[in-house]
Each structure stands twice: as structure tokens, then as C-alpha cells.
Image (cartoon, rainbow, N blue to C red; front, side, top):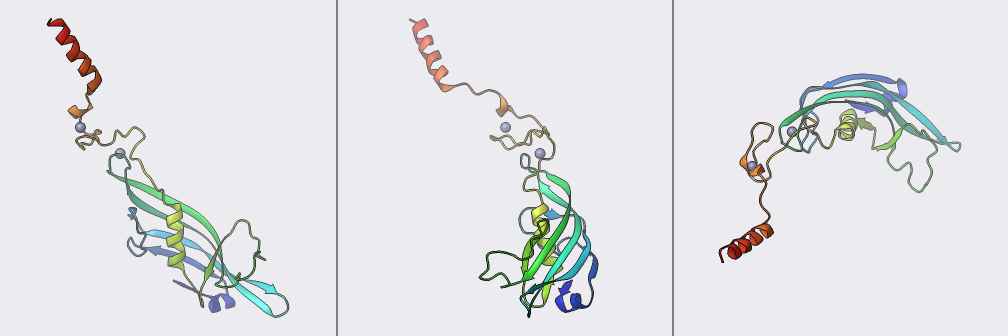
Length: 184
Ligand SMILES: [Zn+2]
Ligand SMILES: [Zn+2]
């Protein structure tokens, strides 16, 4: 869905969109499992600079939800996670801030981005928001025992024999010495 600045000039826009998994490429290891739902409101905000210059910003407010599948950081089994994120964003025309340090719109709540040309793609906005909302790491459960570092078995499912304490080679040396002394 393209948010066109000329359309927004005429009226604000409410959106309610649903994206099937794989419509938005998220990259990385997170896989989208359920449709991404996004709803919100887009409107034009005009900034007046001096007498003649008007800068047209796009303000976007909304909420998104989606189900994801990640890998457990310990045992590598799939973990399902729901994410939900409210966003409030302000997009300024690219170049609007060139040569200026300070922004005239000080909207502490809004994150500021830039749009190019006639507007911006809602999909691009959502991709960015999803990436921000997605957890970097997931654990299938608090007491996940992970994989055995020696044999790679999933210790939640089975025990392996590697877990037995390995004797310290220094003690081995002493034991050898004692045996030698004892045999004398
Ligand atoms: Zn796990
Ligand atoms: Zn093992």
C-alpha cells in the first residue's frame, strides 16, 4: 500500500492491512508464521518555514501484530512468539533537514524517518517496525537444558553419557605417581 502525499493532502487515510507470511521479507532467522496485521492512520502535517516554504510530513500512527517462529538459542527447537507493537512515526521529505541541526517539529513521541518522492510504502514502514519489535533471542522454556556441547544431543529429550564429570588430568598424574609409590 502506497501512502501518497497528494492523496494525503486531500484527506487523511485509515488503513487496515493484512500481509501473508513472506510478503514482507524480514531477513535473518525469524520466520513469520501468521499474517501480519497492521491498522492505523496516516495524515499530512505541514510545517511552515518562513513565508513561502511548506514542508509536508507524513504522520503515521498504528499498531501491528504478527506471529513468528524463532529458534531456541539453546536447543535450536522452534519457538513461537507473538509480537505486537504500537508505533507513532513522522516521515519528512528526504533532504528537508539538510544543513539544519534542529528539527522544527519536536514531537518527542514520534520516531522520525524520511520519505522520497511522492510518499512511502506502508510495507517498508512495517518491515522496519517488525524488525524493531522482533526479539533477537528466544528460549523455548526457562529451564531449557540445551544441546550437549560434546555429542550435540538435545538434553531436554535424552541424557547422554558425556555429562559425567571428566577427571582432571592433573589428578590423573598424581594418581599415577601414587600408584608408582605404592608399588615400591
Ligand atoms: Zn530450548
Ligand atoms: Zn553428550
